[in-house]
Length: 275
Image (cartoon, rainbow, N blue to C red; front, top):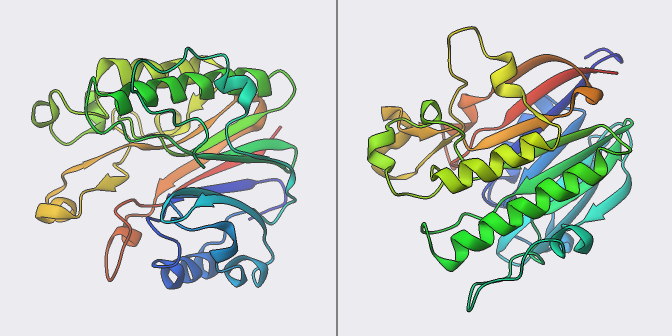
């Protein structure tokens, strides 16, 4: 990796302590400049810090016990961290309806200035079931993320990486008919993701995909042999503003979905030439 390039990897590890050995091997094999993790599933003091400090990374994390949790680690500086979705963004979204949960305070976003770019690790709520309170809360959270992104882009390039729990189009799922009426593919969720893109970022997987080919899937259910049957979805994304730099490459490391104790998500990596 030359000094003129910047690599960012995003990975929903589905439990950093359960995946510590795999993560260590991954970092030794293909160390990115910036690493974004989701679903760490532990408090910050429970993070195995030596994974990062022994390899030259600064890091910050937020978490809430065995659920959610996001982390950012950087070898190119980590300044002005943002811990959680800022209140200014969440306050601009309409209030929950009735008994809808309020997910704005959950540990689902962490961001920092790394090499002159604001980079965020994002874990969008799952939504559980279309038209449920959790689904409406997911849409509100995504609206707040779009508003925060707009604000950041007024003063800084931006890269959002993480598990967005939305497949942008029918090409991003193994069988659209099998998922009719399910979360991750509803028109409302896709519109909420489109609004984040409209804030001023690009879906880098689509921008860098070979002509005529859809981007690769990033998630496969543990059940029913989904990975081996190709029953996956593309719900993990790296979104970058044009001001962040020229897009050089994008990849999905399918090998990390294989073998012993894998996450159900594969890591995705973007390489750019900073502006």
